[in-house]
Image (cartoon, rainbow, N blue to C red; front, top):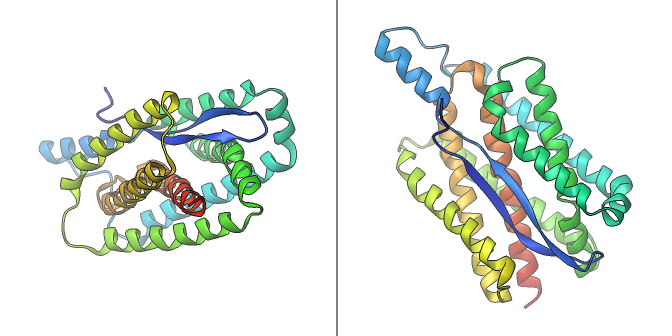
Length: 265
């Protein structure tokens, strides 16, 4: 089945202080409507659904996988600082191998997301790799602002923003499906703008505006994806966890960029 939506989440290229170069931190997002189409098809045929979320069990599975991914991302970032940093500096091409691995895993997720235990293994590998590849950005921020305090501010702000968006998305009675088009078009616009920014670097003021808009977009995706948890078939909990993971990961990156640009004023 052809994918209905393939979204590539770009994190604006950032100066790599030690390499004296700039690179693109690419985050990919492959969130298709495959599971929803299957659910609708069963309804049309008069067949019972696989098991749409009607209890806490599905939500528990999603949040367990989500928490598992967060821990592995932290482990990946720690490993990057402690062990892989010198390797990336000596061989910058290696980090692009990790980027390619992330893209491969996320764009093939619907193939392996229901195959236990492969789904946990590959989801964990994706999360670890994501933490690993974000190290150049984190290291650049730490060097530029003289310590990890700015990272802690970004983490706290992300936790509050993600939690607020998640609660709203889960509890609201209003359908958020109408925002899907706006979010997708906004994401495409951000991708195009980021690519242009590689060749035409923008000012710090524009960076603040762009990062702030990114925070809004991924807060919107968090609300939208939390509401969508109520329509997932029960065997697609890894897909749901992957969506939430990408929402929070990119929300953190854009909040970090927003705080960093504000500090440069």
